[in-house]
Length: 471
Image 1 (cartoon, rainbow, N blue to C red):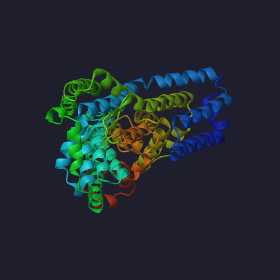
Image 2 (image 1 turned 135 degrees about the vertical axis):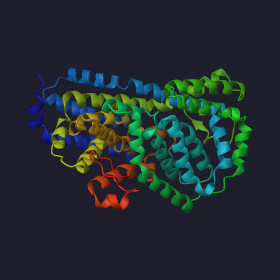
Image 3 (image 1 turned 30 degrees about the horizontal axis):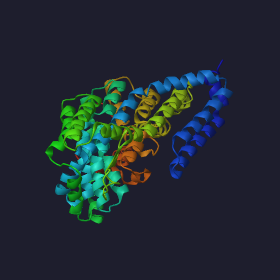
Image 4 (image 1 turned 180 degrees about the vertical axis):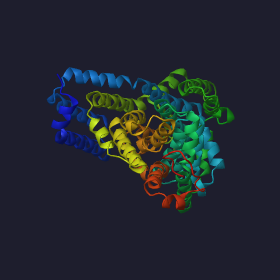
């Protein structure tokens, strides 16, 4: 019989800390050395399995916990794989090249970085998915940046930050709907409060990207780039139809996976009829990714996508959700709730959500798991009345949702970085993602003086309790 949680808590304080520290060190080392994250995740899971077996849990029961945990991630697999197919088929249809072609005509090179942030923010608000945004307009912008010799980490930071503007506060966002569901709050009320609590972070991000644009403007984009696209593909407004389909169906609030399927179908028809690829070639692109067969200087730029590109990420998801399954059922994280019992102020509560959200994002490796783990651990600090349930929803949106992409091995940041062919070096330039929790924390910890200085509008007195800062 496994030991009770009380006995487990008494006997495992030091070795649990060692296991957590060792696992975290392995994960960080893997990102610095470029080691596939699945290996350190497996090593970390083995460390915890050995620890828990010493405390009385059987190997068989731990494997069953891991299996039950991994089953909860099944819905993530289809989204990841479809993103890979969408990217490859959009390439073959000329959709991504067409976006690039027309983008070259309209984007002012002097404000390219700012445009990257604003464009991805707009698209993500429409379709509600960071992955879909990065795999479409994000790729187009990176291709343009590559052709003009810009700092690609800076551009990727602006793109990924913009992608999470909509992922956080679009009504079509899966994370926004998930949080509304688990906190039992109204989605559209949450969206309104999300905008109010992000005003200053959004304004400062725009200011910073404007400064970086002026300090590091794009070189005048060589028209040879557009000419080469025109030579390799049939370019016209019809090539933009797969992207338009995604936007229209998102506006109609059609489920994202169905929208992607329709877009894939439309793009396939265009690839077969206008770009003159064979059905076999299209299937190959969908499986292993798009690549130009014809010799061109764009051969290394117009490439990517496919099921294979998302396979490694899917493996990471399977292992990480199995890991969390063990964590949850063995109550290894029960000590966190005891620590939360000492919190008294709203500022400290928000700081606690930040800390737990970061830990959950680091060990859960997906935004969804991070949200669920954090909500499960902190919910006792929020009362069951409507005001505090709403505060819990906003605190989750202002912490774990935007912190997850900042963890290099979390798929919230790993997938966009993989799609954009970059690495964790984008993180320092994703201003919106860390300004949002930081500014809300400052507002809650240093009030009322800072509220008077930083508020973008006068504070209105209210009789109800709320953790909503004036940002």
